[in-house]
Every structure is written in structure tokens, then in C-alpha cells.
Image (cartoon, rainbow, N blue to C red; front, top):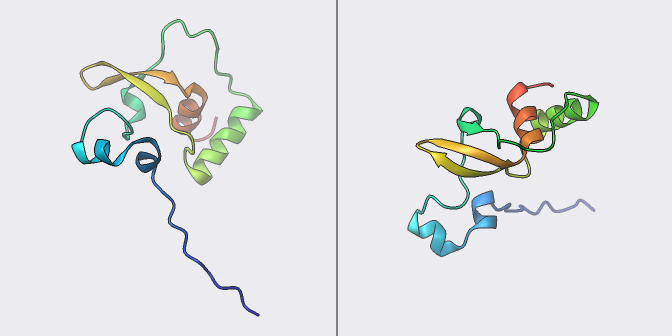
Length: 98
């Protein structure tokens, strides 16, 4: 007997992390797509990103699947953002390979 294919509607990141009223209001707070070039590093961050085998695997995964866990940023000026979390993901997404 052939299996029936059931379409699955996967919610967007905006739908997962905001309420309907927040989406309806059009507020800039919440989930947004931001260019990597507009994100600045968090000054004095205690951890360093290494270009090692793990970074290579992460870059390959992002190239294949995209960034699955959003980065966290906060506004730091006009059209600039400070990266709070996701330094490895940013590096892996921005380098295309290492």
C-alpha cells in the first residue's frame, strides 16, 4: 500500500518567536532578517571563534540547510547592530567555507 503524502506547514521564525499582535503592529522589535555586514562584534567577548574542523562542518551545514537557529543582536546605532549571540554561526555563514 502506497503511503499518503501529507503536506506539512512549517512556521517561519517570525511566527515562532512573535505573537500575532506583534506581527500585526509591524513593530521593529522581534525577528528580522539583517545583513551580516551590519552586525558588529560584541566588544570584550570572552570566547574566540576558531577556524577548525568544527567550523568547517558548521559552514557546510549552513551552506546546505541555512542558519537554523537565529542570531541575537541589539541595535547599536543607525542601521548597525551588536551581535549578542551566534558568533560561530555568523562566521560560518559569512565565509562560505571556514
